[in-house]
Length: 112
Image 1 (cartoon, one colour):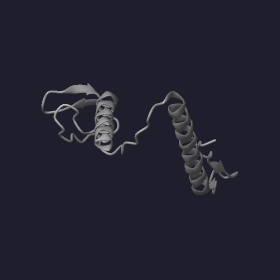
Image 2: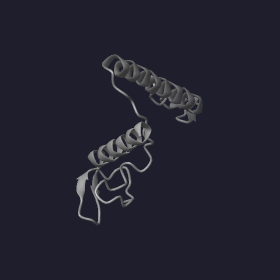
Image 3: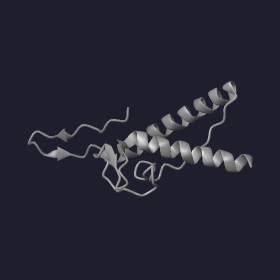
Image 4: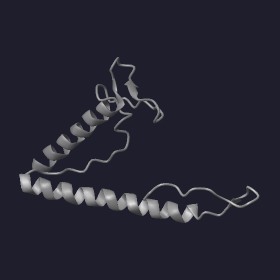
């Protein structure tokens, strides 16, 4: 449902308007609704299991070194995190460690 609309050509080979900008807004709504539904289900299951969900802002989680805290800028195509401190890990693994740390810190400050 959220794919880009196909280009439309006339008989001469010229491209016609395909309402791509309108479709882009629809795609955003579809994707947002999917995440919202996922979060609702996640919250439901957490309550069912007696667990707690903590939202963590995603900014810089894959760029911040989980070993030393330095920000290492990289493009999305770079899949390996390499820091000057010597820490090397998969970009997603590094982000997961940072997210876990922020979540645990948030939980500790809310309990204390």
